Image 1 (cartoon, rainbow, N blue to C red):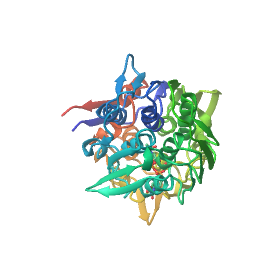
Image 2: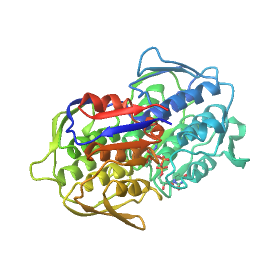
Image 3: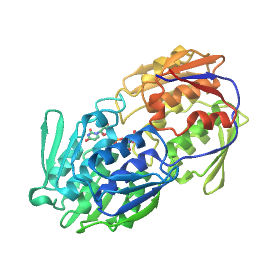
Image 4: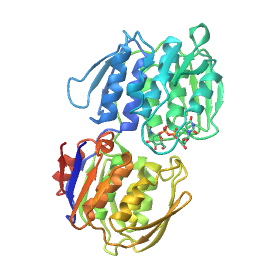
Length: 422
Ligand code: UD1
């Protein structure tokens, strides 16, 4: 397993380009299964989860061409199997996104129950209940979800999610797009990735309104066609680099991003003393404000509030802020696995229920630490960048799942980081 070696204490300076959003590219690739015609996607990040998603499409019989970095041309005209194998699904939970499109287009789908990040139980009961409301028969057979649509086609329905679910909303959007009649989704997720998926699907001919709001309507159509679409920039990578600039007391230009997709993060970081200047619609200039960082509580919530995917990185930053902050995680249980590792590096953090209390500011020192999930890995990289001495991060395959060329990007702005291959 590869490791990172970081020699900390260097301010990051320079310019960094933000990649396409992993969490948008994943459903967009799945959406290509809805059509027998070609879907061309640009700005697809080259990260492990996307490689897995491409493998999944190919296993189903689709062709995926990558004529240049970031472009995927997907032809799902030849899809002839409807099963996502356990070997793929266990490494990536987003494989469940194949369920909606397969069920919609072919009336049948079989997908293993997912694995993915070790951040709690993460069920897919809400996806399955919604498929049933669309008329599917859903059963669990030896660890696989088997779903079929009677007479081959789903029927529009009124669906109200009891809890906001991002991939659940995406799965239902895709399932409903080829159903007879109209589907309404209430308490839909409002994440920018939902809007991006709706944009792509609309280009393919889907009739979707209300994407990005809690109530969406999808009018089923007979078939979807070809489309060309560019994936939105990754808002979590953007937030991570903002923290990187602040925690190393550096100065970064962050370009090709969409600040309007991370308003809550930017507001929170400004409030604690990070100087974030919106140079233009896609560029941010970031540095730590002169007065130093002040501790401030945060609670993770569905979009547009503070995202759970920035919680770990924010916690690392709070170790360098003056005062005490309470960080409350409301989306996932078991998402504090970075805490033990940060403590080993010198942080003063205690956990009570779903709240972590960080007492700052404490100097961090390099240590051997283990990455436990994607965003936890990012928080450890950030800790390593500001720590004194050498930090070894083990199991960096987690970070490879979602951050494109992270080592190269960080090196280019002055970080002393290297990948140690094993
Ligand atoms: C997506 C993101 C992930 C992000 C998360 C929350 C992708 C590929 N991943 O994950 O990076 O951290 O949104 O913003 O887009 N739940 C149920 N039953 C279900 C579905 C979800 O109880 O059927 C619960 C989950 O356990 C969790 C909450 O709902 O507590 C939100 O999960 P959800 O929004 O579905 O997360 P993902 O879509 O898996």
